[in-house]
Length: 175
Image (cartoon, rainbow, N blue to C red; front, side, top):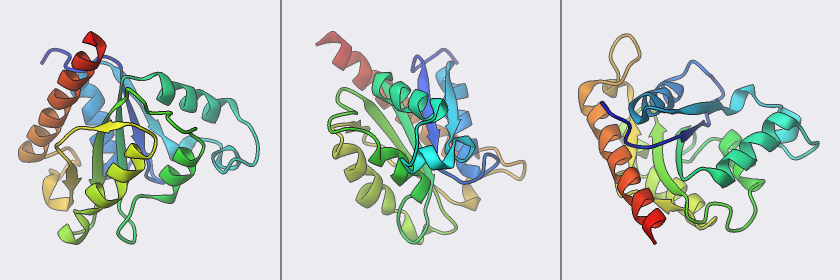
């Protein structure tokens, strides 16, 4: 597949770099043809909390501000996104996602919290002036193969969201 999104930045809000959430972020970068996954669990914890400065967190914040397409992936805990994601987004200034197209993705243990993408992530992105693509991604264990990769139906939904992001980013660039 040719690149649909150039230079995708995928944020993994899971406390584990080997989680299903990481798998979604990594697959998005693979499908996009370029980009990288940022595992928030690997960043300096004190800097994520804003208690000190650290080059790894500073660099991620700058990358977020500069990227045209951002995938925000999080596990759902207590019907909302992870605390790791929250502390990162708290450090972004007002309007930090202006002209940034965002793909919203979440993983959960059951279907019970599928609306968390629309009730939690969408307002989070909008509060920073980001634009979310219409397709919201929520994956449970049934959406993954035994080897941890996305099953075909989930992979197709991810492709749809990436296509929407590419179209919206192109339209913004043309303005």
